[in-house]
Image 1 (cartoon, one colour):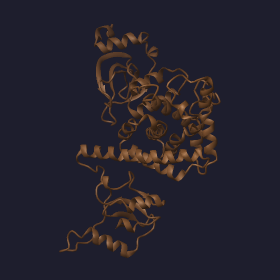
Image 2 (image 1 turned 180 degrees about the vertical axis):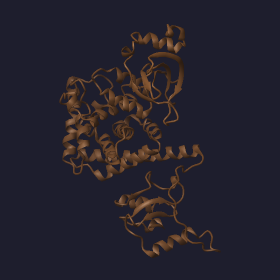
Image 3 (image 1 turned 60 degrees about the horizontal axis):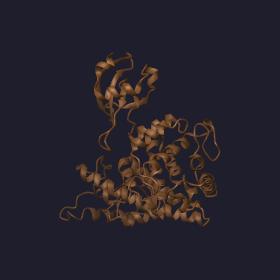
Image 4 (image 1 turned 90 degrees about the vertical axis):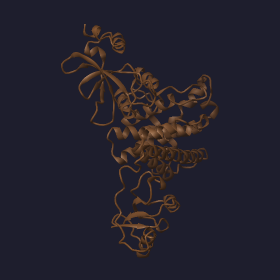
Amino acid sequence: MRHEIRPEDVRMGMYICGFGGSWFSHPFFRAKFVLKTEHDLERVQDSGVPYVVIDDALGVAPEPTETAAATATVTASAPEAPAPRRQPSPPPTHWYADEENRERADRQRAKQIVTRSLKVLKTAFADVRLGRAVRMNEVKEIVDDITGAVERSPRTLLDVIQLKQKDEYTYLHSVAVCTLMVNAARHMGKGATETREYGLAGLLHDLGKMGVPETILNKPGKLTEAEFLEVRDHPERGYQILAQSPNVPEMALDVCRHHHEKMDGTGYPFGLPADAISLVARLGAVCDVYDALTSERVYKDAWSPAEALSAMWSWEGHFDRTVLFSFMQSIAVFPPGMLVRLRSNRLALVLENKRRKTRPHVLAFYAARDREFIAPQQVVIQDNLANDSIVGWEQPEEWGFDDWEGLAARLRRGDTKLIAA
């Protein structure tokens, strides 16, 4: 049975299934969970919401006096006619009718998550420097918050993370990789538990860099051979640290140790062949490099997402291309000039977006089933089934497009006569 109680009456072990007031009033992205930590208890009690909805069938029940007190608080606005206490309804799908207000609230909440993440990671990395174990409970709370944020508005959180300062890169790079891993795992259809483990692996993947001097990590020029060897040690160093910490999932150990391995066997620290690199480590490699390329550093400017993915796609033997393409789908960014297959079974050319942060644009020009050119049509790729979507990539030569660059140039110019010829 559900009950509405005051925030100060909430106790450990209660199952929270909703909050009074607007979504922006309470401190959690998720609104259904068992209260397990003192930290979360304090956040609920200090939240300022008018009441908390709990379900005693799934957790600790409230005292009768607590329920009565909450009821009095909720109905105090109408003392002249004590109406029966209303049954709480499930949280609405859209918390704001006004889209602009909702986006503003999402952005503010994303900033709060980034601030908390930065604080927790700085503490965790400082503990590592002092030889202490990682505080997994605090780290997992951050992953839960990031997962909730991604479920609500992944683009907003990624946009906020991209504003990271150069001197915070090491920490917020880990937050970004966590976010990208969670987002990609959800796109791949992973379950809730596995998705959180993907996120935790992303958050901890660079822990070993705590043993690398800042002067090396932020060196504006080319590293010496000795400096590069020190950097190359960070995956194994991080793995050894995590292996000594309690309750670290195997997935996090795997990504920490192997996110610099390459599909052609030229990666480090072990030069593993492709069949020895797990799916999650392959994804970790993609997320790690993508965020590094799209971030501003002391020694380079940030690349645009399309520039980064174009380069990554061109690096033969570096990434698992199936994983890299799934990653592109998860963030809805594709390299201009790529040949893709649409759900409508048409082949299309990915066009360059004129403005950043807009949906992908492609030019459909070929019927795959009939193997013939069609009148080119520009398509905006959306997330819903009512519109066309990108389902795969194609090799131009397999379709007889031997001069793909020339064909792509003619398509961009709208030269359909030459295409038909």
